[in-house]
Amino acid sequence: MNEYDQSIADVLRRTLHDAQDLVRGEIALAKAEVRQEMRRAGVAMAALAAAALAGVIGIVFLLTAVAWGISAAAGWPAWTGFAIVAGVVLMAAAVLAAVGKQRFNGDRHMPLTVDTLKENMEWTRDRKP
Image (cartoon, rainbow, N blue to C red; front, side):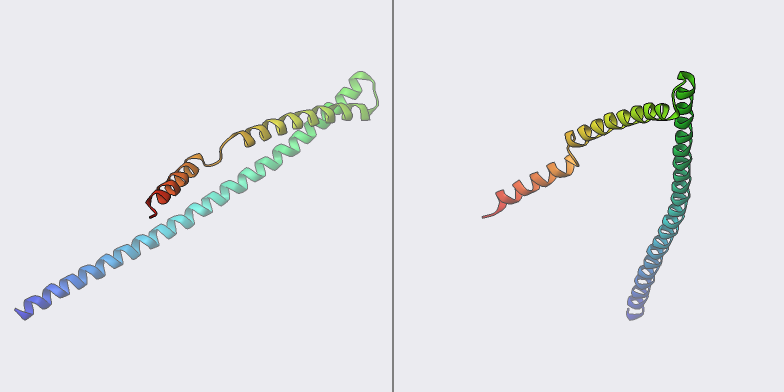
């Protein structure tokens, strides 16, 4: 009977050990996958940053060409074309800033979390003696 009990204990020990090894293996796999995803995300972010920089440089060159074109077409000095383009860009920036501010101030931030916290606080207050 004692040998039977030892073999059950051994089986349980081995099963527990195997389960621990399995969990460790899964954790190691998850870590490796996270590292790989982070590398992939880093490359994607670098590509997006480079694209944004190239886009900004392209817009600057385009606006410069528009400014030169306005001044050349109207026969005005170069500064007037640049002033017109700068004025239009600044008006667009002001409109975008106003829209962004309105949307930022108008929206509730994390509404579900805030509502849940309020419910939990009310429930806790109701439970106090």
